[in-house]
Length: 200
Length: 61
Image: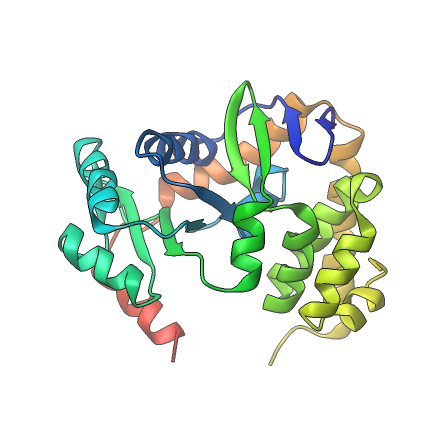
């Protein structure tokens, strides 16, 4: 895998899947609406070649007022997206305020969809505020730092999640800030499990 | 009834093998292979909204 990574920006080129193209399209709308965002969870591993797909792409956004959110909602509807579990901008914003997620999908589809939530937990804010720029084929995505992503996946704990974590670890082992990863693993109480798998 | 320890180890061994393959293979090559999987699943996915939301609700119980 040919890539350049300095801890903040990760650059590589690849053949984009239909899922990648959809993600670039969606984050383009987030950027247009000036919403601070970070992609977390399964798609991050898939972006780097993990041999599976996903029915949703998890995104945390920074807290915004309704006026800003409704601009994003309008952009979604104008660009042929709909909200799977909300009927209006007000309904969707209400869900976000209650720490629920909203799911946006392209018109006439339900999967894959983008599960969007306000950042709430410490790890959410860490991902949002110390994110990595992934530049793929000269296009930008904002993703969770790998040192957070890996322990967080162990915290989620399913077989699929641990496999995702291992995939990212195996690819980027030499480039990871191991001390940072260990510290986050400790905070998430997954240090023992990660040690058992040889990651720490 | 989950996977056996042996099954899990075999799955993890494959994850490592695939990652190792990606590391030594040009990006265009491994990504083309991955895209066959992703694109075919996307094309064949059910788009039944009611069913999707029902399954999501049930899985959260």
